[in-house]
Amino acid sequence: MCGIFGYVGRQNCAKMLVESLATLEYRGYDSSGVAFFEDGGIVTLKAAGRIENLGRLLEQRGETFTTCGIGHTRWATHGGPTDENAHPHSSEHISLLHNGIIENHRELKEFLQRQGYTFLSQTDTESAVHLIDYHYKQCGDFLDAIIAALKEIRGTYAFGIICREEPGKLICVRQENPLLLGVGEGENFMASDIPAFIKYTKQYLVMEPGEIAILEADGITVVDFDKTPILKQPLTVTWDYEAVEKGGYDHFMLKEIHETPLALRNTIAPRVEDGLVRFGEEELPDELLRQAGRITVLACGSAMHAGMVAKGVIESMCHVPVNLEVASEFRGKNPPLIGPNDLTVVLSQSGETLDTMGALKLAKCCGSKVLAIVNVVGSSIAREADHAIYTWAGPEIAVATTKAYSAQIAVAYMLAARMAYVKGLLPEAEFRAFTARLLTLPEQVKGLLAQEAQYQALARAYFQSDNLFFIGRGLDYAAALEGSLKLKEISYIHSEAYAAGELKHGSIALVTDGVPVIALATQSALAEKAVSNIREVDARNAHVMAVCTENLAESLSFVKDLITLPVLPDLLMPSLAAIPLQLLAYHIAVLRGCDIDKPRNLAKSVTVE
Image (cartoon, rainbow, N blue to C red):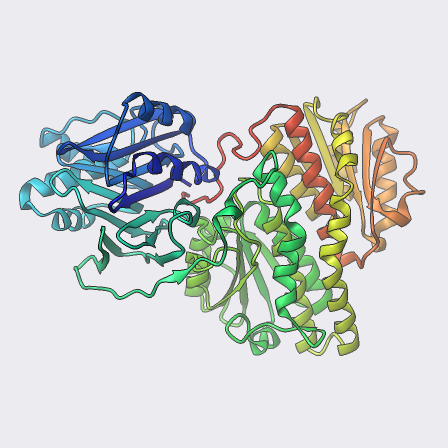
C-alpha cells in the first residue's frame, strides 16, 4: 500500500523526492510527505490530499538543496488523512517513514510518554520513531538504536530512517512489507517499487524480511538484526522508464487495457515450443502436475476471479478437484483442509499481497507444494513459493488491474492444458490444437479493442445508474464477478454479480423497471439456459445489455444493447469477455468524472491485513 522512496547521493534530490513519489501514486494514498537534510537539520514537509499539495509546499520554500532525504505516500490505517498523520514522523534526532502496522504501538506509546515524549499524531508509526530516538539517546549509535528498537517492536514494517547527526546516511529495514534498493553510481535509492527509481538506475537489490540496509552515496551495506553482513546480487530491470508513462493515453488504465495483446503474447509465446505449451523445470516440473490429486487456489480481489477461471478450466480439462479460497479467509481456517499431496496455486499481480503471502505460508506449513503466478519478478510471493510462473504483463500502474488479470487467465489455460497432457487426459493432437488457439488470443483481443468506440457509446446509457447487476453461468459467472468489481472500483456505482441460475432464488426481487443488467452468454454448453435467464430479467423490464458470442446474436436480438464476441472454445471465452467489460467500466467512470487510476480508498499493492 503506502509508497516509500529515499535517496542518498550527490545531486539535489528535493524535487526528485516529490517526483518519485508521484510514480507510486498507484499504490493508493491519502497524504504525502518528505523529510530531508538542510543546514545541519532535518526539514519535514507534509500534506493531506494529492501529491500536488506537497509539491506546492516545496515550491513555496524557494531554493532548496539537499542530497539525502525520504518520502512517503500514506494509505491510512491509524488516524485519518491529515497533515499531522502524514509521514515522515520525527523526533528530536530521528525522522522515519513506515509501511505496515505496529501491533504493540499502544504499549510502546505509554512507555515513551512516561519518558517524556509527546505524540502529535494518531498513528502507530510515531511510536517507532520515538522509540528509536529513545535508544539513540541511550547508546549514541544510529544503527544500534534501530536494532534495539526492532527487538521491542511487533508487527509488519518497511522503515526508511534518517538521523540528524548523520546527514549522508539512510537506513532502511524490512520485515514483511516490500522494500527494494536501487543501485546507482555515486547515489543509491530505496523504494517500495521499481517505478520510483527506474528513471535513474535499472540495477536493484531485493530486501528480505529481517534485513537492514545502510545506504550511503558510495555504497550499500546489508546486515541482519545481529549486524552480520549479507551479500546480495543485483538484479536488472527489463523494462524502461517509458513503460510507466501514459504514452498519449488519458489514463494508465486505458493504456494498460490496450497493452493486453502484448501482455498475452509475452505470457504465452515464450512457453510454446514445437507447438506445445512447456514450462521450464524451475517454473513448473511436469512431475508435480502429474502427481497432483487436488489443487487449492488462493487469491484476493481480481486475482481471485482469475482463480475462479482457473478452477473451471482445470476441473474441466484435468478432472482434478480444485478448491478456490479467498486468501484472507483461508488464513483463519483451523485446520486448513490441505495436505502434503496437494498443489497450492497462489495468484497475485504484485507478489506482495499480505493476505495471500500469509495463506501461502500456511499452505507450506501443511506440507503442500506451492506454485505462484505473479507479475513482479523477485517479489516476496515468488521467492517464498516452491515454483513461480511470471506473467510478463509489464508494469501495471492503474489501481484497477486489467492486462495483468488477462495474463493470469492465460497462465491458467496453459497450466490446465499442460496438466491434462502429462496426466494422459489430453491427446497430443488436441493439445496442439488448444495451443494454437491460445496463440490467437492476442489478435482476437486486438480486434475487440478496435471496437472501443462502440463500448464508449454504450457507456452513456449506464453512467447515471445507481445500481447495476451482472449475471452469467459457469465461466461467465467468473467474468461477471470481475466485470462488476471493475465497475464498482472505478465508477463507484453499486454493482453486484450473480450466478444467473440463482436469480429465481431471491435476487430477481431487485430487478425492476429500467434496472440495468449486463448479462454474459459466451458458454455454448450453457447457451440455452443463459438465454432463458436473460429473458427472465427482460420480462421484468430491466435494461439489458448482453455480451455474447456472435452465433447467439439472433437469439438475443430482444435486448436493449448487444456486444458480440468472436467464437472460441468455451474455456477461452473469459479472455475475450474481459475486454468490453473493462472498457465499459472505464468509459462509465470517465463520464462520471471519477479519478480513474487512483480510486478512492483503494491501493494497488495491499500490504496490510
